[in-house]
Length: 101
Image 1 (cartoon, one colour):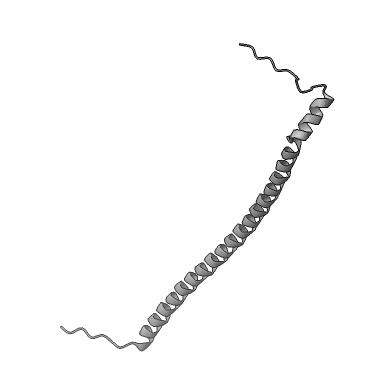
Image 2 (cartoon, rainbow, N blue to C red; image 1 turned 90 degrees about the horizontal axis):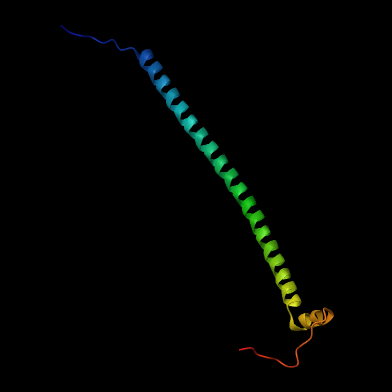
């Protein structure tokens, strides 16, 4: 018993076209996924840069405010300032110091 296959070029041609279309479809879906991933990464990077810039500006302003507060503390705690304020409150330096044992 012999099995004979007929050569059908149109059938093979149709199968090749379908395979190439499926392959092209898969490639296009893959490329679309890559493009979407690239857009997402660029967006995330831009948002991160903006937040980093805001945090950096906040840090600079807080450091400047700390310097201002340190200067105010230094002015208010200077010996000359404390002596003048104690004088206005009626306090004076003691002339004789007595120690209790």
